[in-house]
Structure formats: structure tokens, C-alpha cells
Length: 187
Image (cartoon, rainbow, N blue to C red; front, side):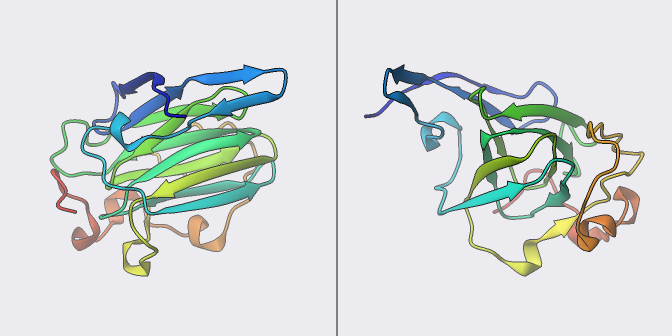
């Protein structure tokens, strides 16, 4: 059963970020949602891997970024605040920060292109899936400080629980030049 999205639109804050609001089909048995189609996102490459993440309320992940990999996030259950920050030197939206609230009962996905830092804070216990267009590459797993004042993120959690890696990411101004994404990215 192929379906079209209800609505797909590019962010008005960060170039290349797309938000999809898929159609929901339901009856007395339950519901069906086609949560992602490559054709919804102009220029998107094929997503080659799906991952699942379960997090407890208060968990904070990020901010991560990749020079070569795009992500597509979709919440199955629970709620989270997504924080996006454009790190791409020369991008028309370089330095822009955006927050998007995703919930399992409000069907919405977000496409995150390479060079856009991304993270989330779990506002409740949650289950999310995310698709990626590249296999895990440790040299493309980069990060920026979640609490960098230059980013100004509003995570919506008072006392986040996070990994040592995420707690120790460099500030935006301290990212080495060779790890700074450039616009347009060559992937």
C-alpha cells in the first residue's frame, strides 16, 4: 500500500531540514502509517539502515553531527524535543537553531542533512526509529556541546542524563577546521 504524505515541507529556519507529516490510515483494528518515503525529500539518498532507540524521561542525546550522513527521525511512542543547529560554513542558515517537538501520537518525522547538528531530550520514556543513509563510520561521528550558549538550545529538561561523550563535546567555536562542515556538502 503506497501512500502520499499529508504534508512535507522544508524548514523555514534551517536549509535542507525537512518535516514530514504522513497520512494516518486507521479503522477498528488500529492504524497504518507510512512514516518515510525517499521521494518526499528532494535530493535524498537511499536510507540503508534503520535503528531503534529507547530512552528514559530526562535522557539527552547530542548534539551530534556528520559530514557525510543524513538521518530521518520518527517517534513511535513517548515525546521528545529535537534540537537542530546548522554548522555548515557558507550555508544560508549557518548558525540557526531550531527545536521541533516529536510525539508518538502526532505523526511527524524530521530529515536532518549532513552538517546539521542534532540531538534530543526525552520528555517521557520514548521509543524512536531513525533511518540513516550511511553505515556507521566512527570518523564521521562528531559532536558539539549541548549547552553551548552560541547555539542557545532549549531542551525542555531541567537535569539531563547524558553520556560522557555528549557531556564533553567541544563548543562550536572550538571545532577544528577540518571537522567543520562546508556548504554545499560533497557526500
